[in-house]
Image (tube, rainbow, N blue to C red; front, side, top):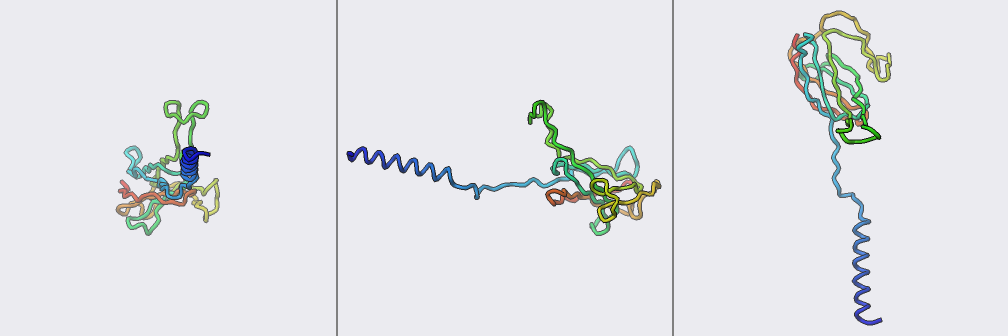
Length: 172
């Protein structure tokens, strides 16, 4: 083997070894970001007086979401509700192109009426420990529901992450 051939082999070996090490490096230094659920608005309804409409996005698609309506300090629960975030909808042939009908899901829209409706827990549970509240059907706000400003927030059950807090005037 000549000196020139030996040098070519060494350079090729170093290049191949260097690429192999680069490809095999784990992506442990890569930063991953997890999107937090976000409440976009919580406003009094212009159609149904006393009703508060809540909308948000970034929740687990098709997952359960627990929404709470508390006093302005977040210490006294006024109303709460379980809902389901919108599911992922794929376009034709499983397309993820919005022009083909794809939506990522994870959106919520919920209304808090000025009277206590029957509220079931997850999967229709009637266990009070799981969120069930028997409704009274009366068209009067629950005690304290119209006492000043309120805050609303939501919990994505699957990721166990809370959304931001939003202030809302009850509009009663």
